[in-house]
Length: 336
Image (cartoon, rainbow, N blue to C red):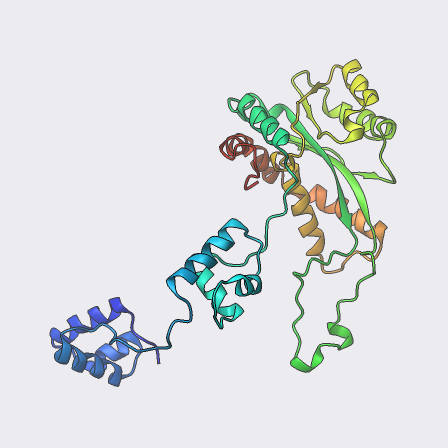
């Protein structure tokens, strides 16, 4: 049977005092009539409907233990519960679960950590400076002219530990329940793309190692330049070696391409990173998974073309918030 909460007990008591029958109250709260009867008896005997004090199991830790556990894990968030059991001073017989319980009481729970780029002090300073320089930029007057570009690598088979199989207890090693995976993930394909509030580029397959010469001849000249024909267009690219090479810089200067200065180690500032995640999810949701690299590339190109343009506009419209977030974080990692 369900147990009445403190608020429900007060309501039930009011109904009892108003003369409503115990059976009617029990039906309303979906509990047994004996529960309501015991509640009324307790109120008549003690004048309260609160839980009676219970002896319970004695607490295994002292206040000093609790403080030690909390502070130790606040100072180093990646420590394990077992390490705190071993480091706890004085004689004790604590289990790992007891430490976890104390951490739960302090609002600390083990969760999957965010994977972020390594940020040095110089990186943080540059990110804050860049954010301050673009705080006044608006979507209407500035960000809608920017073409955000990037390369991304997609694996043929991705095993991140999140995939689940529905099986019986005895079917752990059944052929249709085993997630078979190549030793190195089966390889993958690299693609290049660019997005703007008004459209997107074609998804370009990048084969092999990308160099400045290949970047200019295979990506910038045939695919990027046509997108940047508008005199107000601004081109964004990160600081990868092929993007900042002298050959690339000279090519963009000769063709009068306005390039958006970009802080190093700042994928969270580029909205196309979220589009890559969405593209990967769309490919993984397909009923027939790609069987080889050619199938994977075809699936990526098909899903790239079907992503609604409204989704891309929403991502680019987040740029003012991203600038405010990086300034507020003093150049550190942001929720984006």
